[in-house]
Length: 447
Ligand SMILES: *[C@@H]1O[C@H](CO)[C@@H](O)[C@H](O)[C@H]1NC(C)=O
Ligand SMILES: *[C@@H]1O[C@H](CO)[C@@H](O)[C@H](O)[C@H]1NC(C)=O
Ligand SMILES: *[C@@H]1O[C@H](CO)[C@@H](O)[C@H](O)[C@H]1NC(C)=O
Image (cartoon, rainbow, N blue to C red):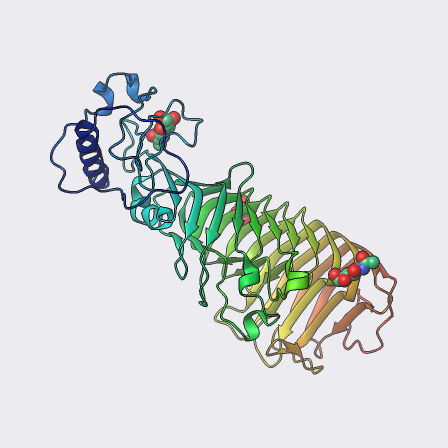
């Protein structure tokens, strides 16, 4: 019950504001909210009634009770229904719809906006069961910090989320917790405005560019329907997460093609279990998916364009170098350097096992339709495969389509005996050349 305390502090302080200014006010909106954080300590001891006895709140279900505004920058609306995510608005601050029997977490819907929205959201996040981020302008060099949320918190992006410019590592957004539900309201965009950093060098040099969205340490959570644009560099980093679904995410970095976008990986996955990425639409300039480590990972129903393909790896040389039980299915890859790609690191150890690519359609692939190689070092192929990261139990089933005429259909470069138990069915990649540099091709596959 100790988590009740901040809520009561909040309620008490709000009631002080309410009593001080009796005139009703319209709902505040827009980004111009300043300086109001969740806790107005020292405002006295107004008595906000308990929910069960508050007039107009029978049984704890709030009715519409517009509350007065202390200043033009603050307003507070009661919830009219639980289906209204935007139930309460309190400027760039937290408040409030609560249920009488919320046992160990508050049940407040809080809306944050403007240039103080990110700081206020971070400060008040523990008091809010729903966090609405409405036209939040995140200041330069800071993270929209939604880490360590209370169990079951919903986060809703609304309007345009923007970020100030600074050369730094980021991330611009970070969310963690258990049972977290992140979603986007219709018409929203999370706009990295990456062109301010783009210099064609990505994370290999030039300006230091912030990573976009950390989905780290999320458990039994969902990220649904987000619309992200123009990432400075890598977009989603999924790390240390378990049972996380990322559904219907759109990433449009197409401006990066002509303006120097580079290493704009859409989904980088590491040290995670039970990850589902479904229905993604990606336009970028690097891997659509890159799995460096993890288990039980599914990518399905995706559409990838402009990038480097659906990749496992590079695997090796990190803390965790095991990839297992991965299914990549029902997806199309177009206008990309590669289609299906697995790369492991030269002289490293680890393993890649139980990977299935099924029903993948390729079009206009400009380097390799399918590429599997065990020779990567410092991000580049060496041409010398080693055997320390075996690739076993690999299924390719229904990989079809065309590569560009100067591309290679299939390239396999394995160490001696380090690729085995491969099952290939209905693999038909055409339009480019047949490689004569493949090595140690296991039975079941061919170049
Ligand atoms: C939170 O409040 C909403 C609206 O009053 C209600 O429908 C919902 O059941 C509450 N949730 C919890 C966990 O109390
Ligand atoms: C794989 O992950 C999914 C999604 O989290 C989960 O529902 C499923 O039970 C997991 N399967 C195994 C074998 O762990
Ligand atoms: C093929 O893809 C490349 C790389 O994205 C692109 O530059 C080119 O315009 C595409 N060609 C066609 C015919 O679509």
